Length: 219
Ligand SMILES: Nc1ncnc2c1ncn2[C@@H]1O[C@H](COP(=O)(O)OP(=O)(O)OP(=O)(O)O)[C@@H](O)[C@H]1O
Image (cartoon, rainbow, N blue to C red; front, top):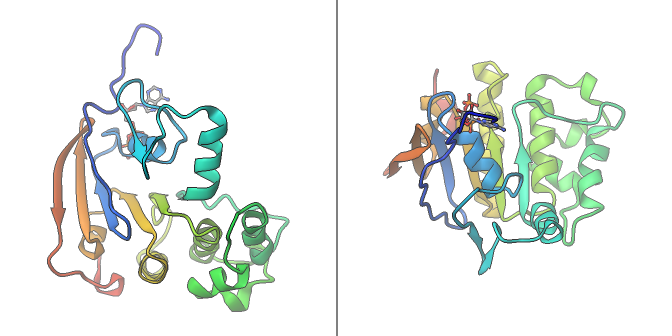
């Protein structure tokens, strides 16, 4: 940034495995979003490599990167980014129409428990329900990787738990590698694996022996 050099990440070395539910914890500015954006092909590292399924994403040309994002990666952000003039089902169908081997959009909504609300517009849904539609949309293309940046950041506990349950169910039933960035330490207890980031470095990488269900979490 002009005269100032910002090191968002410093020598991150990480291997992620199919089917894992990974929570990434770290203070504000520690590099969590940067890591997620690099893994998702939204940002490119200035040095180093990102490998996926035998290929190198960091060296990919823009067209390949677009294909990687479109086919392999689902994104869920803190604010749901639904299209207000489309119903829940149509928001999901927007993605399934351009995917290679998508789910039926109604099946995706069923996975997040919102099948009955399929013809409702975002304004007719609560924040947590909108986030579950965003999850259905992200998983409907059957991504290998589901990247979630503070998915419960804007929600109260009860609603956040429903969103976490939807993420857990899709991880279990579809085997999608799910990565959830959060400030919220409590969420770590439902993850297979917990990464801690501080000052651009991975300072912790542990596995939970026993997992807690989302409804057992409190914060
Ligand atoms: N586009 C950018 N240009 C310049 N600096 C950036 C940019 N994006 C991130 N940074 C800096 O990189 C560092 C890591 O930012 P990042 O957003 O990855 O952190 P974070 O852990 O996700 O933080 P938060 O929890 O607040 O979202 C911060 O110092 C941030 O200011």
